[in-house]
Image 1 (spheres, rainbow, N blue to C red):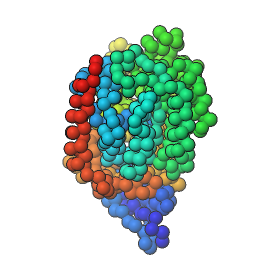
Image 2 (cartoon, rainbow, N blue to C red):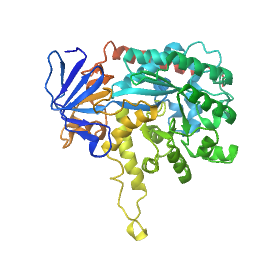
Image 3 (spheres, rainbow, N blue to C red):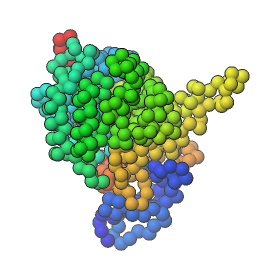
Image 4 (cartoon, helix red, strand yellow):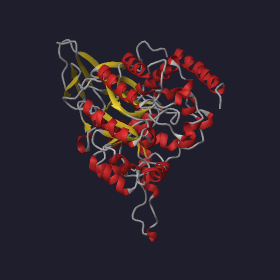
Length: 478
């Protein structure tokens, strides 16, 4: 028997990431061979097969995080931006600290963010990295991929950046200067040639992702970016419609809506997804659905910045593929996928409940308790993300798929008393202990331990790095 065969035995519950009645599988056993799920059911161990006892554990597809800014892992709870909405927060925190990062602090921030995600059961991270400027002394792209490789995670580099500046950046340091357009395009080709692997088992992908379409590049360049991305066979990503400011800016600058602007510049389609999409007009939802353009829903960041709650029910009904992202830790101090799924579950219900009216005023329902099920949220956070990222063999627990699997051990008091253990990792909030996390069938976390990682040393490094960044920010000219 191949040593690459693993039998997960006696799972209490299995959520698959599939829709409808297929959302749960009775199991209780899962066989993984050569990185692929070979069988699910009541299975007998084969000679020489490794056994993993999942008794009293629940199995989920590993989470797929479709929008992050990992460098912000050293900017959590930054006081100047803590009580500000998006535009003021951008100036107060991420732009103010941007030039304070060097190679070592950027690398540490990435490692912290990936570790936090990994411990929540996340296997795949799409990082929207926009720390690029002319003549940078270090390569942030290389750092992202090398840190992901060290942990065994799947990294999708969404290569951000800008070829024109924004008004809020004018008084900020050299590190905010826009890149030359030809250099940006050449670097995209370099990154695709060096890192992008389109195979299903790939742990490295590259995406064209100017930071924000309305502000980061002129329209003609956006068209060229989209054209290059499609010629290279890569996907497209950006921020869109996070707040009402996007609606105001699009009308003032282009006399159209943000989604119309995207359509005019070839930035809609089933190879495109946008972070946030909180403030959309009905006709914009219809356009996104018709073109199968996706969303990375970031409920905690949208809540923290006071941006609002994206209408996932209307978006999904219109045909928009839905996924979950945690956004950066500077606007989401719980930047892990279990917390994000918990927030998504609650806030879709709260959003619908806010629309309820009394019957005497024409109301027809009391609240939004039926708005999103746990199974919906798991599907969005796994299969939905895999679909949006083009990971055709990832995202669900079913035969023939790559074994990206999280096995949660619900041994904390917050899970005691559950009538349905399967919902615990989402419904109860907090972080469940990981019996195991697998990526492509390889166990990268076991019994809540990440091999070779000293969390206490990381904690002390982070405390020191925060002080360093604060000192650098204080010493910069206004």
